[in-house]
Structures are given as C-alpha cells and as structure tokens.
Image 1 (tube, rainbow, N blue to C red):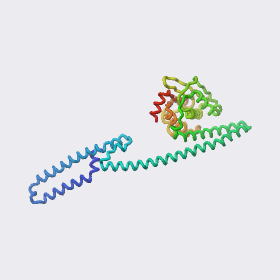
Image 2 (image 1 turned 180 degrees about the vertical axis):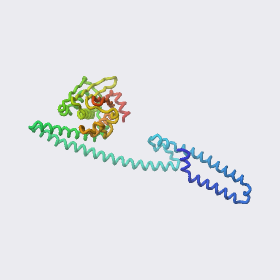
Image 3 (image 1 turned 120 degrees about the vertical axis):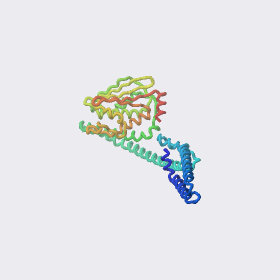
Image 4 (image 1 turned 60 degrees about the vertical axis):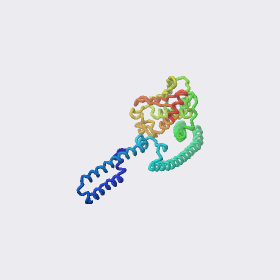
Length: 343
C-alpha cells in the first residue's frame, strides 16, 4: 500500500484536521489582539501543518507494518493463515472474525460438494455395472448372428460402446484416485499385452502391426490404472491411424528408472498443440476433422492418473509421420519421493 492509498483511506480524518486549522486561523484573525500579528498566525499554521505531516508519516509507517502480512499475501497470491493476523488490533480482529465466518461457510460448501460428487460417482458406478449385463447379453447375441458382415458391423458398435462405458467408469473414479491406488511391482509386458487384448478387435480390423521390442521388465505402478492409460494411448493410435498402421512398444532402462515408449505412425500432432493435448476437452486440429471423433477427455484423464501415480509422460510427434508417448517408471525409493512431491 502506497502513502497515497493510505491518505485516501484517511481522507475524512485529514480533511477534518485541515478544516480545524482553517477555522482556527479565521478565529484568530477575527480577534483584535491578532490583527497586527499575521506573521504569528502563518507561523502557527505552518507549525500545525508540519505536525500533521509528521503524525501522518509515523501513523502510515505503523499502519504499513501492521498490515504487511496481509499485503504480502495478496501480492504473492499466497494463502493467508488466520494465525498470521495480529488480534490485538481491533480492525484486524474484525478481519479475523470475517475470515473465520467465511471459513465456516466455505467448509460447509466443500462438504456439500463432496457429498454431491460422491453421490454422482456412486450413481455412475452403479449405472456402469448395470449396463454391463445387457452388453454381455448383446455380445452373446452377436455370436448367433450368421451374417458375417452384419456381425462385424454390430461387433464394432458394441466395442465402441464398451470403450465409452469403461471411460465413464474410470473417469468418475479419478476423483478418488488416491484412495484406490495399489502400488506394487508389476510386469510391464503383461500389462501391455492386456491392453492389446482389450483393443484387439480394432487392432485386427484395421490391420495394425504390433511390435513389443523388449523382454520382460518389472515396474512399480498400479496395474488397473496403468492399463487404462495404455488403453487410451492405443485408442488414440487407432483413431489417428495411417493407411498402414503400426504400433511399437520399446523400453529403455536407466539407473533407477524405466522408460516405456509407445510409438505409432499415425497422423501426428502439430508442435504448437503438444503442450495442450492433456488439457481438459482439448481436441486439437485432428479432433476437429470429420474423419475423427474426439472428446478431448481420454488424455486428460490419463495425465491425471499418471500424475497421481508419479509417472511423467513426454510427447514427441511429427505431423503425418509419427507420435511417441514416453512414460517413465521410477524405482521404489525414487517413486516414493516423487509421489510425496506430487501429493
């Protein structure tokens, strides 16, 4: 706060003091004893004005020191702790009471929002489990269909519905991801194979060449959530495939860390769009084309999951050539340090 801001805040008091000096000056000039002593009146006015300026500067310094924690918190946009407010000042005590009241209101709103979120999550989870039954029934009915072309078309729609249902289930659970993590040593190759199996229908339909260019290696992660992330990467590769599609999984091992790279030869991502592909709802120039249908949510949820798991992801891409998604897995000791920071 500058001294001009302080003067604006004290303008009524300072105006009253100045008005008092004017009234006193007029009163002294009206007295016969001071009519020939104009110099003394001017001297008295200057003395009173100097005293006013001196008191104003001192009061401003004390005021600034008293409110400095509040000013610093506002300037740095940092949270203001109620413990930082000195309660010996009446005006600050009032601010403290207002903040305490607001804290109670915010806490009540937070509890209500959490309850509503939990209710929605329970509803979505129940809906997903209930819709699994008709989907399973539909899958059995598909096997009875004798027309192969019709069966293939219906199977494709069934697979797409199944992907969307799983997306709803995992997307709703990301709100309570911390409570649903089971971190342990997992076989990376088996998790990739599980994801390939999930998407086998589309990989076969579009004649993907899939290569796993590494031997078995173990990493510390949550199997269920990582498989979901791999599913999203595969679905993106399928969606933005080339005419001769290919998927390659490769691993580079360094001291304390394992890097998994998922490479595809699809349409690629523009360089300026790469920093935004994990933003909520971002579809990019590819997602706006009629050829592709994108919601911009798959990679958003994937990034949230990877952040919670402590697995950094780096994206490299060339338009019309390829895209590389590299996920890093740290050893247990490094993983524990990393997740502490991310939490």
